[in-house]
Amino acid sequence: MKHLKRFSVLGFVVLISLSIIFISAVLAQDVEKEKKQAEEIKPPIDEKWYEEGDEEVYKFEINPITPKEGITGGILIYYGHFVKPPYKVELVPCNSKCYEKDLKYRLLINNLPIIPGPRDFLIRLNKASLKKAEEKHKMTKEEIEALKERDKISENVRRDVKRYWDKLIKKYDANTEEGKKKIKEEIEKYIANHPKIEGYKIFNFREFEFFVPETKVDIFSGWIKITISPFMFLPEEKKREIIRRREEYFDSLYFQQKEDWEYDLGRNYTIAYSEIRVSTTLNSIKKISSIISSNNDYEYKVKKAYKITEDILLSKLLVYNFDPRSFNNYMGENHD
Image (cartoon, rainbow, N blue to C red; front, side, top):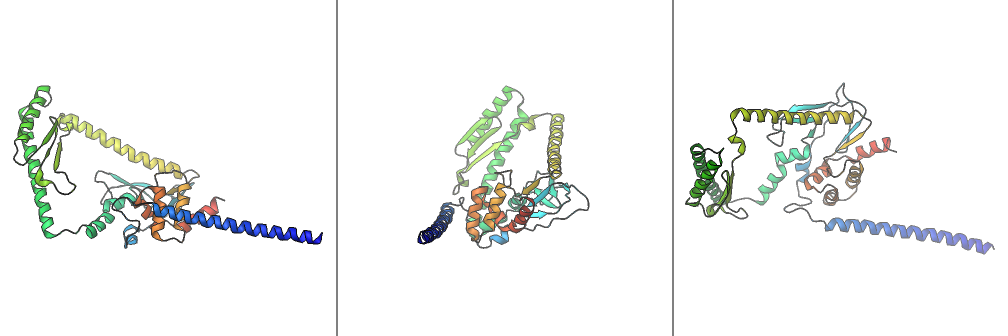
């Protein structure tokens, strides 16, 4: 009976040991499978998962200020960094830090850029693209001169067509069907007989494109398109009214965004800001944190982040700026 008990205990220990070995083997297989899947992902065209100097290009400073007074209730996590409340949400007039020339304001929270965010700001500065262009597309002096000559020809032909169109718009009334017909007929004749143009398409009296062989290079087709906005045919008073309404509309959008952020920060919410468009929950941010805190190299991390963001620029920004320690500490303390 004693031998039987000993055998049972021994069998149980062996069973547990085998189970541990089996589980470890399965986990190891999962890790290898995950790595293999990451290796199989291909980067977007003309992009690399990692290039020397990436950290210098994609790293940015995260230095929030803490106002004496502001919004309390919610918590802001900015690229994995815990941002201490209270929060001040403000609209600041645009300057060189706006990535689009028609943006009127920047939205900041405790002096951190929200709209446009670091991703869009980097696009505005075009650091990554310029760096790659300098390295990959160094042109000879002859190539530069040839490109300038093609640009000059293209601009001259465009100017010729546009000047002739301007004469026609003064000659005929573009607000009548007869006038539009005449403009279309005459601009077509002019384009068809232009010495630099071979081939054209006339869509209507104010939209047309034409082919200039001397400007064709590599993937650039040599086609030049001119589209005149119908806005220019409106009376001046109507134009001013439309411009005023447009400005009021866009101003209202800016202030609505400001109010939305103030409302969310005033509630008992944790807002994890990292420009990820695929999810409004913390799940994606948790996955990113797990990827970045791993011991894998940068290339592997960018690949894994790309599976979540589907955006290589954003993936690199996250890998080089996200603070998993700060994020995990906050989540551990507040989300048990």
